[in-house]
Amino acid sequence: MFGRLLALIAGAALAVAASQGPAFSDQYMQNLTGRIDELQPIVEEFDAKVGEYNYSRAAAMAECSTASGLLEALCSTYETIVNRYETLLAHMAELNAASIWTRPLVLARTYKKDIAESVYSAFKPAVPATPEGFAYGGGGFLAGYIVPSILFGLLGAMFGGGRRYA
View 1 (cartoon, helix red, strand yellow):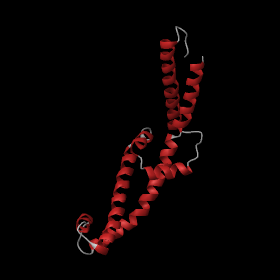
View 2 (cartoon, one colour):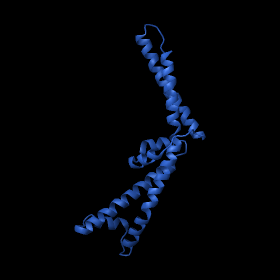
View 3 (cartoon, helix red, strand yellow):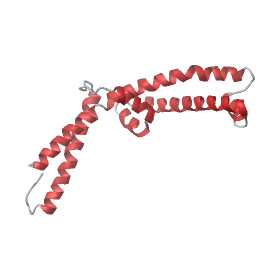
View 4 (spheres, one colour):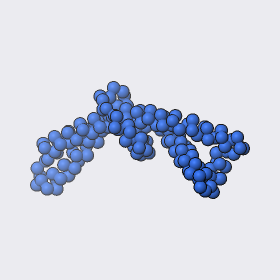
């Protein structure tokens, strides 16, 4: 009986946590879009400036790798910005390629720590009112209920002397 109660509590807790996945992934993507939008004009300006000297972005970055002094400092800054921009664009493409049903799972595997922390700091859990939220909540409940039930069933069989705990 006690095992079933613990499994039910674990299931309910995991249902609430998992149901937040779709809303969190939406807010994560909004934050990611804002960061990309912030970097885009800087990268476009860099591309335009190096283009005035008949350089591509790749050629300019290659030449920057041999720079020294002040030019090295400037190049380093632009290289960091361009790399971050390209990384975030690729990350956004990966999330956009995922279906609305799998996006929280893709995000859990590929998230960027600084963006996730920023989203989490402002995230307010809410009751899910979407099919995706209900599905993730139901999946969370099943996982949270079944795993402890199996665990307590095994423990009861091993140590309970025939008594059932789950």
